[in-house]
Image (cartoon, rainbow, N blue to C red; front, side, top):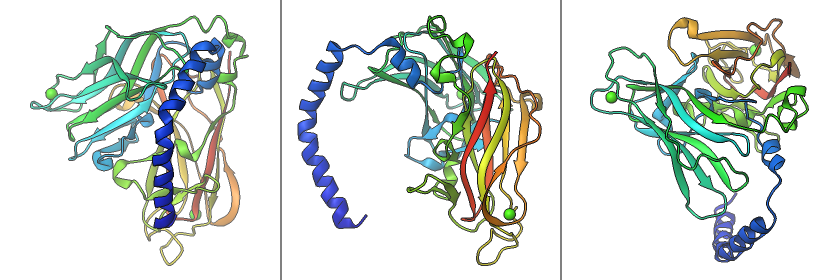
Length: 361
Ligand SMILES: [Ca+2]
Ligand SMILES: [Ca+2]
């Protein structure tokens, strides 16, 4: 977009905002006269795990945009602070009508001078600048080793989940490299299960396959901009012919489901060895991805690699990368979070999406 075009858009937005107040009043009037059906919210909630608790993987967090280099994602499944202070958010998808009764987070605090807070926040979709902190957990650690602890808050304000009036997210600021976040757990009571035929697999929100688009993937904050998403077809690719870049994405599956397959649709036309059109010499010239699960603890036994696959050679054709085996295929949503890690480097490493098929008991 040219500078002139940008200015035109800014003027249009400014002009439009004058009438937004009027529009907002129309919207709020309309929504109060025509309450949405309860099922509408449920169908919109793709990331709902199926039953309490909702487990949010660290891979779901993204920078708020201020100081994006303030965090790094560790493939063991946690986010760690860096020397820069910065804040992260992750969306929270709960079933419509649920009542939240506890927020918990598995976090590391190795600082004697600082603590870290993580909040569950409700934001209004109709009122300007209206956010409510529903619950908050604060670390009080000062440990020499990065051992995560569970912090919990059972006094929840505004606990009733309501769509489309509100949206929900968790927010955390990492002061520095003494802090880590492993996973977030939200416990709730819900009557949705009994009215949306979840058990028979009939609910739209749970239909297999789970399709994970490139937009679900995030880089470590300090590598922001080194993997890009094409605005025309949504494909993800390396921005330059540098070394390995790791992307991560949360995987939301219903508790109790059995994973039957995982496939990434990719192009690998990078022959390696450096040169004008290949990733840096010494960098792996193959796309590789892993499906992992982790618990909110730091021991090696807390993380399992479930499946992985890698390209070979170079070809401009789209190929389907499908691991031959899947370990721990039964989704244990009571303990584990699930996430994908994907390695790519240059512009000839392209990812079009990942698809996970599963069955519901
Ligand atoms: Ca502390
Ligand atoms: Ca290759």
